[in-house]
Length: 313
Image (cartoon, rainbow, N blue to C red; front, side):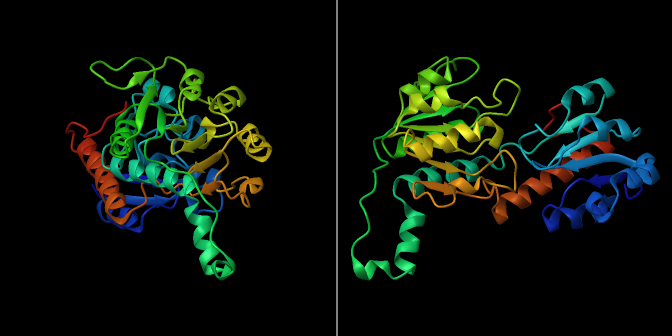
């Protein structure tokens, strides 16, 4: 398959780049100063695109690649891929579910703990020498809190399982009520937020869920509530979140994702009740390698005319 042209849209795991370069004819879009010039010279050579949560395959890119057959996403989310255009063209799409579920769920619980117990602030408190002048402030307990989860898919279910181990009462909101599920179901996010102390966003980003966490949801969660987002930044109306935190209408937030990455809102940088991460939910050595292997396996399956391992389209 060395003659098959594969385009990477964004720098990813070096292991993935190396393996793709070994198996295919690899093009890295960021190596070229002009995207339009690159496409003009190489568009006919590209049969596959490998994207991620930062850069996938929009309609413009898909339209410019006349021989494109498959888009393999190095992420579980496919919101950076124009799925409608792919369906129209008969282009296959794959992602990397399951292999990252545990890491993202682990991180969600880590964000809850870090936010409630002010772990990052306390770390700075010790390292600055401030402990010598007195004890750190009291923080808030996690065990026994009520946890609401927006999106009870693979990751949401794994988060629920972990939160149950802390004695938390679990409720959820999703497109429909899950059969044989013991957790309390709410059919709107506003109702979910009004009935939990910690709201965790774990759904896919769609037109329906864009800015689904708005002022009404934040106010329903309230001044003692905690918001944790490990989904996509655009799930949250960031200006409303910022104003709620600054005005004390929300108790705290743990965020791994932002609407305009890598730019996170500077207004949040000095808030003690906010923990910010750089979209690292699945970023462990073990999981990133497993995701890369899945991307490669899907590409090889496609070009060997075998069934895809994790098809989306």
